[in-house]
Image (cartoon, rainbow, N blue to C red; front, side):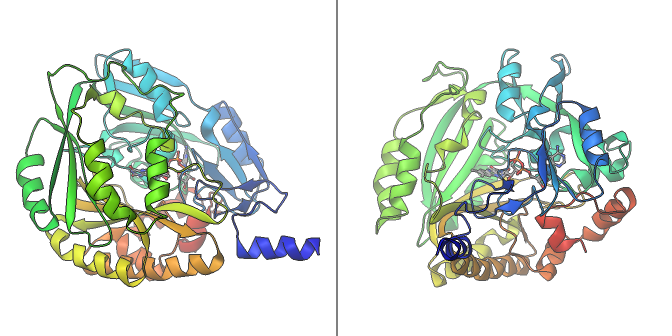
Length: 463
Ligand SMILES: Cc1cc2nc3c(=O)[nH]c(=O)nc-3n(C[C@H](O)[C@H](O)[C@H](O)COP(=O)(O)OP(=O)(O)OC[C@H]3O[C@@H](n4cnc5c(N)ncnc54)[C@H](O)[C@@H]3O)c2cc1C
């Protein structure tokens, strides 16, 4: 009976922790992977010996916020980078910092804030490691910016043969352009030198408009505005016809919050509870767009840039055990001139499949500066879909079906999908989205001929 129950729960709800091995998972709790062991190096020598100690697969883990098994594969040794997290050098004159790759943005922010400096490009939240962010080539809400690679001077990485090399646009450029955005497939990024910017006061402005007016307004009034620092537009389900624009501008106005950063022990209860409620009750999204958000957006807010960039993911993520339901992200990119054509496609697919969408966040990115697996080879708008799903195998199959439809919709606009989320794309969709895949595969073959650096993403597409 015990065996039956164990098997029943294991196969019906993969999120139930019924296996006793060393199991890696991510924030969604739907990607359990049994690895051989996890090592937590604190020096380059320890990383080197972990790579050399095994003939089997090596996987690399940062903050483990990717959502599809990108940090592990069965029987791998996972190198957990989070203890390799020192600041190596801070040059306040040049506004440059060199860090060990396991450092989280939050830890870096605390140090550079003392010198009135800010990270130039990062995600909305500060829990992620620099190495994980580089390997995904992430982006944030920054106006006049785009993929993280645009702020990177150089990186160091340890290759499959144990050599540590420096890579930049001019030195070992094939490694630079493949390891950034390379999801741990090329080697272990050990250090990164990043450009920083001044930490300034920013003021929030909220506007609402019809989605049909958005692109014109954005291109004219936000993209070209030198004082605009951060921007995103929120589209509400089920109609996706109205956008709530949140833009942050440089300002001289007095601060409304004196703290330089959000306290580390901040208890976030309001936003996660709102998300949990609106995704559960009928008419939740109407309640949010018509009542809750207008109240939350009614106050004037002036804060430091570092304050707005120091949120913990706990601000977004409802604190549930994620055994039956989980909260998941996806993202799609389309060239800017396809914005208006993509909206009806998203609307139709999400409605047809009755997806429990919490919101879609619209962002903008300038082109990538050359990474082989670029998600923004040209200027793009991006659509970040935040939704709730059940953890059952059946639910995962349903998600796979509508995800593949959305990817085809993005491809029909000459766009693409984002790789850190659930791995539902077919091989055809991966190759059509990331057209320089062969260049990436060639570099991997050259520097990792035995295919040591593996994870679920590369097991799927690198054959
Ligand atoms: C709540 C939430 C909000 C998010 N918001 C954004 C956003 O605003 N913008 C955005 O672009 N993304 C966003 N993401 C996605 C997120 O940026 C990626 O999942 C990113 O990988 C997280 O960093 P991490 O440290 O957790 O990396 P992990 O998930 O641990 O690793 C990601 C990949 O990098 C590899 N890797 C990690 N460290 C190294 C290293 N040192 N050397 C080589 N390879 C390495 C791993 O093997 C893996 O393939 C969000 C995710 C969540 C859960």
